[in-house]
Image (tube, rainbow, N blue to C red; front, side):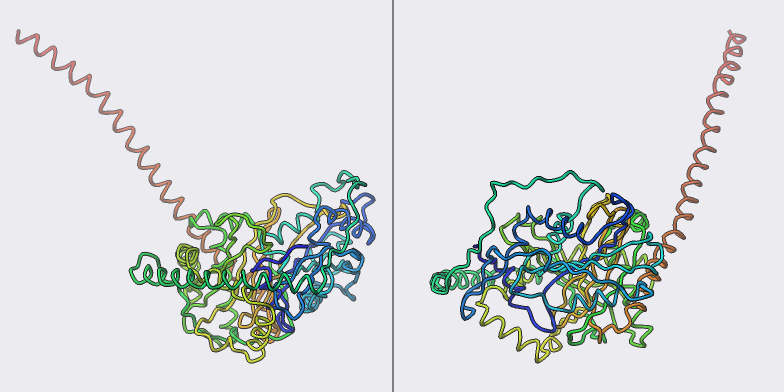
Length: 517
């Protein structure tokens, strides 16, 4: 039995009907690489069972403390049944991309059963009318509660469920491993722990509050002295800044990873900067098409992996968040990406040391009875619309493997990520790179973005515009390089001519000197 960390508990406390706190992923597979050229449902079940055996976290469930007086605990589920978590469905005819997106959006909008281990997976067949997919392809949609994984952890979970070869070596079960038992504690034991933790947490909260106050004061002084840049949170309010309902939409666009790398290298920025530039241009296109041209630049929330910044802890979630401008009001795509690069660098420099990077932890510090009531009141009364910070979207970037992976022998062709929506933030982008491809996925509230296929076209157009601008600059650079080379080659013969004439001149002078003597 293990108690949830503060940030892990925050996602449990923020669970609401309209904003369930789970993340997801959609993988598409080619069964021709599997033994026999096809994959049966029981093969996928066996693969999940075999792979999850080494990861007990996905065999545990929550045990709540009576009255919500303390953070819940993870306990091993003695009744764990992998078949409960795996469901088998098929798209109706014709089975096209739009139908797949609608089905995934419906599945993602449904809350997870909080009395079971907090994950589900759906094997989806009938993808018969999706272009460029191998014949017989199927999809696997997985969703996991955010208390289990963050962005980096979700990528690890995906890798956990896959093999590096189509025919992996069989893993023999260790008979010496004892059967999972349910370590559920009694109510009296939980209440005793809650009373002890209450004293400890009160001391920790007071200590943390004092430290946070000092950190905020120090941060404000550094900003006023211009030692660190101030966060850019002044963004216009648009039709994207609305309350979040219970329904979702999903779509994604896929690009060659090398194309993004070419842009990155040409502008000396990061892949994330390029993705943000493309998304900023796409959001601007979408709003202009709606007749809602924003008065200024849109802003985005950027999750940070705190594992690489503060070291690994025992919590499943180790994520912070900063805000940056997308410079969507800059029409020139190259100038936009360069401006985004400056904004993200400043946001990380100031945000990593800002107390605001850990603002989400507030939802996990207090007992669930307080936090859940506050979160419900906030959501029902749509209080987010009164905040001065108008963040249009959250954009998360996860680097996947550069090599192909396999599930039950089937090669994963494509992968798309789905994030989580919160009150006041109804659009989530996930950037994912895998085996030479890069996908830009969007999950949104259905009322905020009722036509995700239109937005997908905006993503494609935004990338095409940026890539074309880079290609147009390349000939000019090549011409300058050629001109320099040509100038050097012309200068070299002249230098040689001087060297040849010098000895002749010297030879003429010497005989004249002899005559005089």
